Length: 480
Image (cartoon, rainbow, N blue to C red):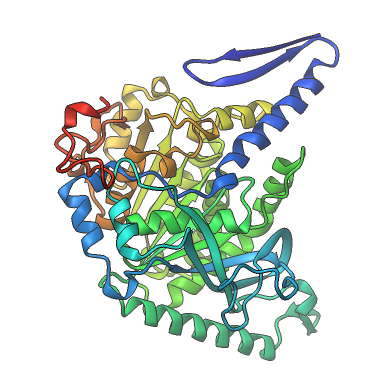
């Protein structure tokens, strides 16, 4: 039996096993590595690196325009989840000042619930510092300290769906009772009231809904959106959709894949609940990794439902932007759902970030003998004919992310790399187009290219406090 570790292209590890028993050993080793790769981001929960954009006058202006009511270290955002609630810890087990809100719970587990719940979650820094200190370090290449983000409070808001055990039988059919409908409507009203309160603090009636991927705990699913929203200038309302993932163990990926199918029903209800609110003008969905499969599945079903009811998709769903970040999605399935079945027609813009060096997706494809993953495509897969067809459709973009992160096998680059995060901010906050506010590389066969130097030309980063006066010269730190 031979087990070989090799590199396919640059910095893309793959496992190959041959001989008797080699396939099984290879499966075990790849599964272990896949679990380890995906677990890395959740281990530290550090504040994401300063985006290159923040080193420019434009970036500093974004941070200077944070709404007054949100100029505090704590970040409060919506969550939607069909995870099981985590039992409240015994008295005295909390850190001082944590989990003190009315009706607070510990959080949620990786187990499935048959209910869709919404609530408010708070995220703060450790150590806890003042907002001015956080703002100063948010504009530096090198920070004075390392910030660990942590969930500091979870306040349940209500239920937006019920499970099959709550249905009643009427005329030989399973239906929700009027009492259950009343509970859901009351919960929707409470959600609307929360949205109204927060939208009054900002001049953008936008919701940024993040859908996480494989092996994310509830805390993981909250903290990444919080850090991203901070650098968006805390406009609109941030929300996370947290589905039952992060079970761990050798077969955790298989569990998460099944949970991804299970959660589609509830994600549809979450999107509907946001779209129903009169206080929401636009919804932006940012789906990462396996979350891309979940999001496109939910949207496909909503397209079918709304089209059958002869409703205007864009007007009814209010989805302005759909971002698929490092999507763990079969390319053929993507074409079916997005192009053939009309998901593209339901959104204002679709942006796909992919990387030829996404090792986690290569592991996943090999482990399950799956088809080519959308998030791990190479530029060579785009022909001149493909480029011409893409250029003719104004609301779809493919961005080849030619950047690397030193952790997570280059799978979380959209949220962890200073260049990629800068592009995401300009896309979501300003609706900027490629090379019209977003300085991407020259288009090649319908694909835009993102490199390490994005937004760095002409930037002047602040130095850490006490390291000298003025700003460092670009030549001292510029990465081409």
